[in-house]
Amino acid sequence: MSDDAIRLATRGSELALRQAGEVKEELENRRHEVELVEVETTGDRVTDALIQDLGKTGAFVRALDEEVLEGNVDAAVHSMKDVPTDVPDDLVVAAVPRRGNPADVLVTPDGTPLEDLPAGSVVGTASLRRGAQVQAHRPDLEVEPIRGNVDTRVEKLLAPRLQADHERRTEAEKERKAQDAREQERGDYESTETIEDGVQNLEDAGEADNEDASASGHDTRQNAEFDQTVEEWFDSLSPLEQSALERKVDTEYDAVVLARIGLERTGLIRHVHAEELSTNTHVPAPGQGALAITARKDSGVADDLRDALDHVRSRVEATTERVVLEEVGGGCIAPIGVYALVQGQIVRTDVQVFSRDGTQQVGESRDLDIENYAVEAREFAADLRERGATDLIEAARRE
Image (tube, rainbow, N blue to C red):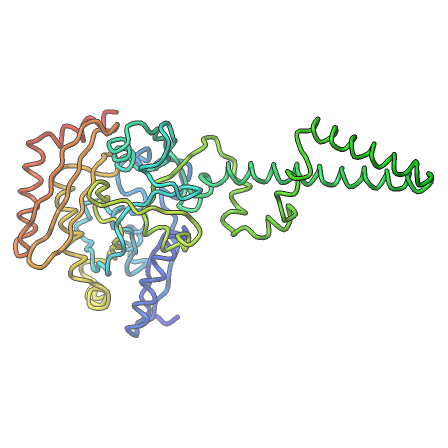
């Protein structure tokens, strides 16, 4: 790698590396040389903690930006929703690439949609916002925290059903082998008897088989329901499912709620049943689906990154969302959703602020003038504060 290569800091998780890889490819398409530098963050070191339990915001961001400020790398690639609104003075969000799908999805083992989940079903999420939105929409469901990266959470969802299926198949295969052994023993015995006695023995053996099957709770038809051996069945599973079989799960989930973009970037979307949730009822986190490339203000690389990567509409949308977030006073410890969408000369902005249990909500949709969107976003946030949004956020912090 030449000395002129752009050094990009990234976390080492699969999702982070995929995101950084997209940025690297885009820069290389613009004739820039790029080197990815993996950096461990606080969030990576505390792998079994929920986001809101990690303390102040920026658990996945600060370490990368420190590398930028110290000159060890030229820029850092972040998920925009993880970037605190108080960016250090010496840093700038140099580029916001074209935004991906910002929606959340409900993932279930069999494709059951949110509306059809039975009452009492357990929904896992690592986000206070998602949990509050699920309970606001379906108060008869149970919401439980779920830890880990995207693939870990999906594995925890799939594990109980796959493990139960594996146990049934293993028991059926054992019974089938035992039945084959019994039939072999009878065959050896019958070969020494007369034909007449042999016929009688076969009839007796058939009755004995029926009695054995009845006693064990299995019969030939039940054993035959699996048309593959356990090994063949295991080999037919996806790598994700094979890994889930080894996953120890303390809580059994009927569904999990995740960001669609995370499933897409890791390639897991092809291997799960995912229902996309409406951004009207499940307003995404500010910046969800977008990336932020940070760099030093005084570095020439910031201009290069902006020229090569910045997508104006995505920057306007993300900026609107972050202005509202900053003015309302939210963060990853508060159940708040903000989603802005540029539509011609307006920026349609939806905001939801919840209590943790989803029973209280302050929300509104408003059209902002694209020529004055930042100022109007602050005014919008001020109105929400007066209606109690800040009170809900402070109550969530106390909890």
